[in-house]
Amino acid sequence: MTTTTTFPPHGRLMTKLTALGPYLRQQQSSEGHFFFDCLASCISAKKEPEEREFWGWWLILTVTNTGFEYRYHFGRYDSNGDWLKDSVPAKHEKAVIQTLDDFYPKLTSLLQDEFKLTVTAASDLEEAELGTVA
Image (cartoon, rainbow, N blue to C red; front, side, top):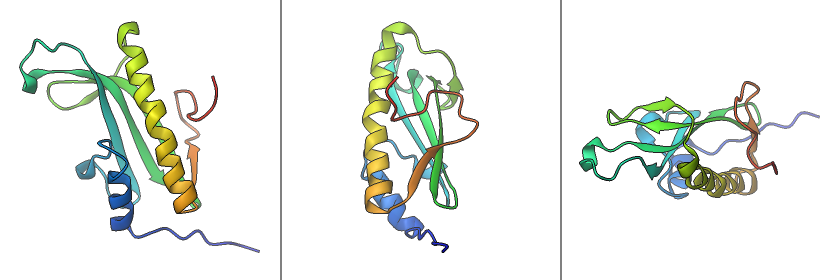
């Protein structure tokens, strides 16, 4: 017996994902593709606000047949507003990882519990799978 996965309308998903916190970037998201990021740790607070760069992460959620798959990366958010994949320095690592560890359970709870959709790591994920004990 085949079961069909029912997805909520895009607008409803956007509303619910936005409510998770300041992570969803609506302008970089589209139907079936959601972009989240977090500027977790300022590199230099001495710079003017518009010139500041941050250490953090970004996560891309893409629709599959049964739910979503994710890819995420760590890196630097530069003064041009672009993410650059980079190793996070040790003194910033805890803050960056903590924000991702706080966000991921909220995301999976919403998608799995409320919408009954799966959330899995993409097969080409380069980082550790989220939600597993290291």
